[in-house]
Image 1: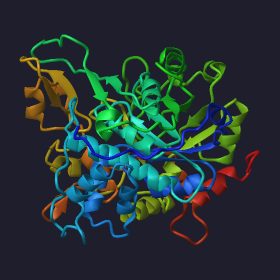
Image 2 (image 1 turned 180 degrees about the horizontal axis):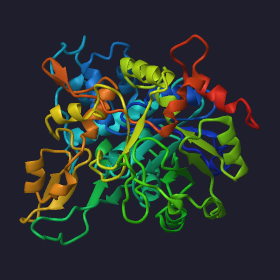
Image 3 (image 1 turned 30 degrees about the horizontal axis):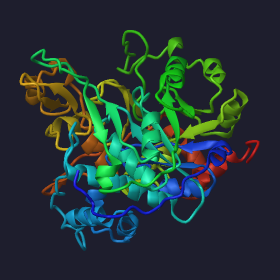
Image 4 (image 1 turned 135 degrees about the horizontal axis):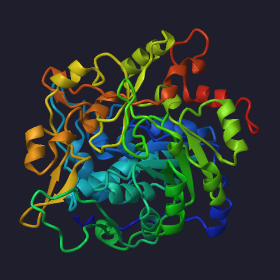
Length: 500
C-alpha cells in the first residue's frame, strides 16, 4: 500500500461502560444488494431511532462510478474531504471525479480488481468508499449505522472494515458464510493493530496444494504511514440460518459476537442452501423442509440478542419476534422499494406497479449466483430474470468480486468465476456443470441502481433481488400515492408494537 504522508486525526473511542449500556434497536434495516441500501436509506432509518445499514458490497465501484457521474450534489466530495488522511483522499478523487460527468454512452473507467494481494489503488479506493458511505449515513443525527458485508466476498473485507471504522460505524453485519474471524479483526483495528483473514481456495486444476494456508493482511500503520488512530469497535452481528451455526460462532469465534440475525428462506438476496441433497419443486426452486427451520430456543439459550429476518415487516411479526425472545426484526424488501432506496426510479415504479396489479413474483434461483447459494430474483420484464435477456448478454467478468482463487501449477494464484465466459472458466479448472444459468451479480446489481456499465448505446441489464414479502408492498402506500418513504414502513410496523 502506498504511504499517505498524513497524520491521523484522533477519533473518539467509547468506554466499556458505554458499550455495555448500548440499547439495541428493534428494527434493523437490511443491507441489500449493491447500493440499494445506500447512505440515504440508512440515514433515514437511523434518524428515526432504528438501525440504518449500508451495503458494503462493491462500494469501490459505486464510489468510482458516482464520481464519474459528476457528483452533482457534492455529497461524495464533502465526505471525501472529511477523510482523515488527505493525501489518500486526494488520489481517489483525482482518479475518478469528472466535473459535469462523463457523456452518455461513454463507458465507466475500470477500477482495480480485488485479489489476494490487491494493489494500493484498490486498497485506498475501498477504504475511502466505505468511509464515505458510513460518514454520509451518520451525518446530522445521533442514530446508529451499520455496515453489511458478505463473507463470500473475501478479498475486499479488511479494507472495507477499516474504512467503515474510520467513519465510526456502530454495527457490522455479515452473512453468506461462517465469519468466525471477523470479531478479532474488529478488535485489532480498534487497537490500531494489523489484522489477517484466511481465504478459501477453489480446487486446483493441477492438484497443486499451497505450502501454507493463504492469508489476507491489512496494516493500518502502513496504510496511514504513521501511528494509526484508536477506533470505536463496532458491535458484530452474524447473519445465520441455523442454531448450529450460531452456536459455533458464539463459542469458537476469535472475538466477541454481539448477536445474530436469524434469516429464513423468505428473505431476499442469497439464501442458505437447504440442508441435505438439493431437491427442486415443480418450477425449479429449492425445497426447504423442517430441518431448515432455525431452532430459536437453542439460539435464545446462547444469551445473545437476536433478530428475525424474512417476511417480518408487519406489527404482528414484530410482536411475535419479541414474544419468542428476539430483540426485534430485520427488514429488507419493504425498504428496498421506498423513495430513499438506491433502486433506479424507473425500475422501482415498474416493480410497484406489478405489486398493485397483483402480478409481483420472486423466483428462488438455485443457479443464478456464482457462489452456488440460492438467490432470489424479482420477475421484471427487461431484466436478467428473463431468459432472453440473460441469453443475449455477453458473459464477462470485469469486476471480479465473486471470483474464487485457486493454485496454478507454478504455485501462483489464479482466479475464476462461474459467471465468466464458459471457456475461460473451464480452462482454469472450473467444472462445466457449474456454468449454466450463472448470472453476473456484480454487473446486474450495479445496473439495478443506475450504475450499469455502458457499452455504446446499450448497457448492462439489471438484476433485481427481493424477498417473498414484495407482494405485500402496497400496505405501505398512502392512499392515492404511487410511492412511499422509509418513514411509512417504520410507522406501519411500529404502530402496534409495545414501544410504538
